[in-house]
Length: 588
Image (cartoon, rainbow, N blue to C red; front, side):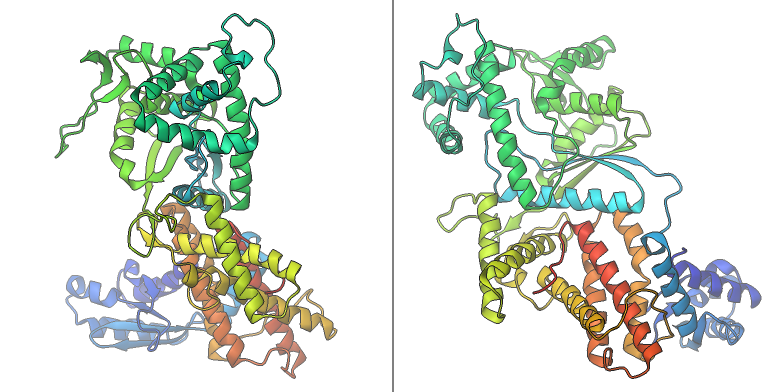
């Protein structure tokens, strides 16, 4: 099914051609003055110089050719040469019918679907998720869902940080507290216990304690670095502890991501590419890409067009140790071998832009990727508190992600209990669903690169541009449909009739923008476009609801048509919120 603007532009192009002008001048856009018209065309302005005619004359010629159009109800030439357009109700009705009948509401499949890998989440083993992990997780999840829906193959990878100093810190503190554990006996040759050497409560407390201590005691930090090297180099006891730490961390991480409705196809980590590093380094040396500088192995990535200094990409430190650079490049190497993606997208803090620029240049220069493989960095802004600084707890600490989710659920529960009569258990379940919409919509409605202020009162409001408002609209539609069924009506095989009033037509016009919105959201990797669309659609529906008799409509055929329009609106809204990563309850 072609996009509505393409269809309108085709019809307008024919009119320009029939009037003796270039068909390409017939590009139609949504009106920026909806009080005057629904759509507009500025082609007469663009064609004035080429045809040496006043724009009004060209616009008049074209408008005359549209007098018998079945697409446009009205085409008026207005000074200084615009074409103001209103589309035919019958034409609009045909588009709405097609949306109802066709898969994905008539969304066209891409000519060449891409295979896209999305690296998002940013979790580190042994460290609890904090509020800074919210944005990459929910942005990445939404982009994955949008691109899949648009027809691309998408693979989401959490890419765990499971090979660094946090592991060494936990091992060091564990040795301080439990030195007699068999893992620290260098002479032990047997199997290591399957049981954990710590309780969940101990594990949750160990890393923050060890991290703080390492900042105060250089000697302790040095021991943690030594422990890190030991597990990385395969010392048996340390490697066994590493496995325990990774396994326990994954359970906690999955629980947290599940609470956000975030799912990963791959749970790979830095450790998965450790064995590839020697091969990669050898290839960089043998092909003349890497050289020694101040003892470290580096690759030059500066380009002649650079206006500022871009430092070399370090591959190995002077002691031969690997860095994040090393594992990220080896991960690219593994991804190309195992999946051969057309595009790899990284979603993390925008302050890491220079780092990823180095990594991408190095990957291209050393031929880890094909020339046509896209490497894309999507840097997100920060979630800030009311002071405009990165969000903190009341005592100034970094809030755990779990705490933020719980705080939002509590506030949502309070508002639901305050404004509605609902059993306590049901209210708690509804609050959980609506709180997720508040968090996700509050974040995703902003452009990815922009910072935003986390305002729990605004995000959990049932009014305005919020997740709860969108869900309230969906629940309102479901309630009307349920009442229709209770009155003996059947939802199957509802027939559409032409719009009976302006608000009904405006709702239909909002619906038929769906395909173009999905296409642009997928191309731009922009969840905020989905948010903007459903906010406009929800507003159009609520205006229609207040202006139109639905269940009280006496004409049965018209009432059935209105019900069909409600069903389509519900389905489009629920599809869109699923792309954002949340769902709607049955009641609110």
